[in-house]
Length: 114
Image (cartoon, rainbow, N blue to C red):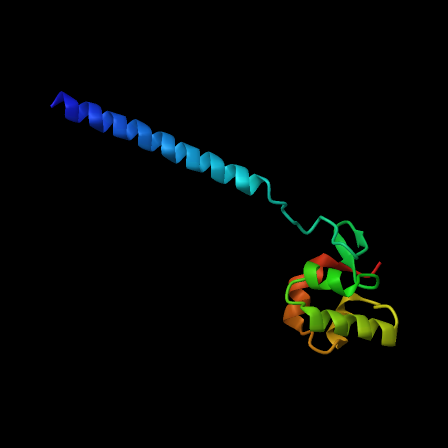
């Protein structure tokens, strides 16, 4: 009977140590990964107060910094800007082929024209 209790106690201690080791390893691996937030500048984008400048951002910055903007839409934004000059307002993004109201609203807080 005593052997059974000692074995159970030993098992519980070892299981706890194993779980603690796995949890510590997991927290170390997630702590080493960089976290990208809306306030961090995106390479190739001029930012003011964490907002991407629609008139100076390159295609890579648009693609990586905006929701729902892939390579094709980023290229369309650049082409529109080159053909029509700088954006006068963020709402003018609706004039770009492939950009709809839903995409604009998802990104409105991330964009500026200054």
